Length: 462
Image (tube, rainbow, N blue to C red; front, side):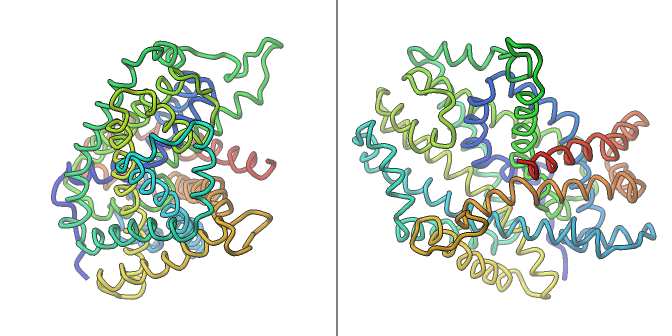
């Protein structure tokens, strides 16, 4: 079967950046930033991005571009070239774990997407701004208990995603990235300007520009390791979720990426867009909630409980509410298509199916999984694993274990076994200095594995 390809360098960059810019940036980054000390969290996040995530992104995309294969077979293809043994183990931990993680993501991501669509419709109708402050929590609680509403909105997202993926790389996925990403950043910038010009927003700006030493371990009682570890693990987990690292997404997109294009420049552009989106999200949400007296430590409820209260206090709040939830919809779509494509790509290769049939099969499996997750989460069905409903369990398993295990496998694979073919692939489109090779090698052999091992150990202990 002929491999589909991105038609341009910018098509790949914007599509991969769109995958990264999702709910992880707009929903998760601001509340983690609020909980872990503003600039303290941002600095740790940027350090992790530079030291750990950059080499891993280069490695994951290069694995895909070198193998021209799916997330499972990529390790077999490259491993066979270098005479590597135990290929089944590498494929299991690096590939099948990624596929499992992606399937779990699909099972609950569309549930969160249903909340986004619901709040967008409520904003459009004007009902969202009429809900009393004390009733906003109950509004969100009632939605999460409404099985039929969540399934209906989730299925709309699922069907839209499937149609885009059926269109293929050039006519479907790449076209969406090329058109939606500019619109997404225009909305980002407009909302950011509005938020930073609110009365009282200066306190939010000060919060974002001030280092809180206690979150880096420097407390009034002396240095303590636990606050620093908490900030580090939160930033590391956020970086992986934000950049779509360890899910096989970048690997699959890399398999569609031309070997003639400069991989370093592409990765740098993706990181810049993703980091800019995260920082703009924090600049939109945190000054706005501080301006109306909402605590920065409000947590995950910021987007669906606290922000509607902010919009109620804004002139033309109706328009700003619509703009914000439209931003969330666009970011959600660009992420769901990348996750969906990763599994579709695997089904096409493993079952020798055409894109339409593979997409339909993935849609069916996702629809069933999403129904079970929604039924468990809303209380319609009493399904729990280790005391957790299916939504909480799937989210916990993906964010805590699968992405870290896949990334650890990938780092060890490239760092110890497949450095030569990966560097050779990169050199086909860009000069590779000796300094970078050493940095790449040290990071993948030691720094990234140690960081990921710490994350996994802390998760197990926790």
